[in-house]
Amino acid sequence: MKIAITGATGFVGLALVQRLMAEKEQVLVLTRNPDKAKRIWPSGVEIVGYSVTEGGPWQGKIAGCDAVVNLAGAPIAEERWTPQRKQILRDSRILGTQKLVEAIAMADPKPQVLVNTSAVGYYGTSETAEFDESSGAGNDFLGQLCVEWEQSAQAVSQYGVRCAILRFGIVVGDGGAVAKMIPPFKMFAGGPIGSGQQWFSWIDIDDLVSLIGVALRQPQMQGPFNATAPNPVRMNDLAATLGNILNRPSWLPVPSFVLDALLGDGAKVVLEGQKVLPKKTLDAGFEFKYSTLKDSLEKVLK
Image (cartoon, rainbow, N blue to C red; front, side):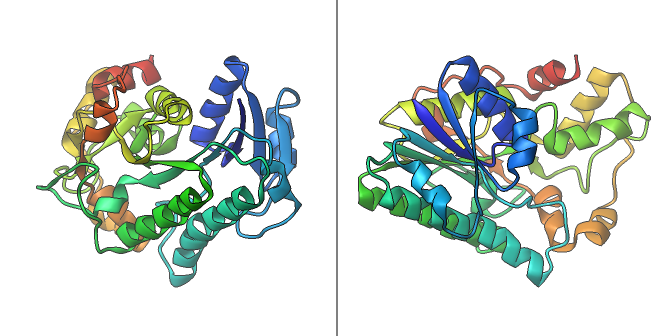
């Protein structure tokens, strides 16, 4: 297969490209920073500069690709959600996906499938509710952002292209959000964030890359699928597991007001959360290699 990928220099994208190259697939990287991409992959990958929110010559490169994986999107929880930041979050996802679908519409021949990212933030937040792919969307900013993001991707179906949408949980691996929690534990200053009762729906990076591969190749993978392990945990359990593996205390909580001060509304992603189960993903026959957080974290920390 020839597979075009946006967001390839990010945490998930790097792992995906590495896997696809190992499987001898052809990879086309669409990137805002070709120089950075060429340093990462001096050979073996086709690299094309593009703008996430604008059309251009890059759109012509989609013709002849068998599949497209859209991982592009500004980080959700790394800055305060000012009005300007919210617009960046929206444009990088919704407008970016629209431009990609526009490129697919113009392509001849067209790709067979678009695998598009979404997030478990689709469901809103709750300490008590349980969500699967049949659950409705939340009414908060992130929930409505995901709704519009997914609608933008599903528009590709009118061109005869299959669309699989993966609603990512927190990705566990050598990078990403969980990696940022590890240094405080190593310095004997680790603990749960916020109340500790919020749900933490997660997926191991290796399982996520495998799920993307299945979504690329299996015709029955159409519509939304939760990219989350079958055993979500509460934040207190995450902290305790990290502490046990590192042989460090895990009782020193990070107060909610610290994150609120740093991230404002963006702290909701960490402080609230949701219990998300991959019902449709499991029904499709996907087998998780890392179904417990302990197994995943032990792999990362070994």
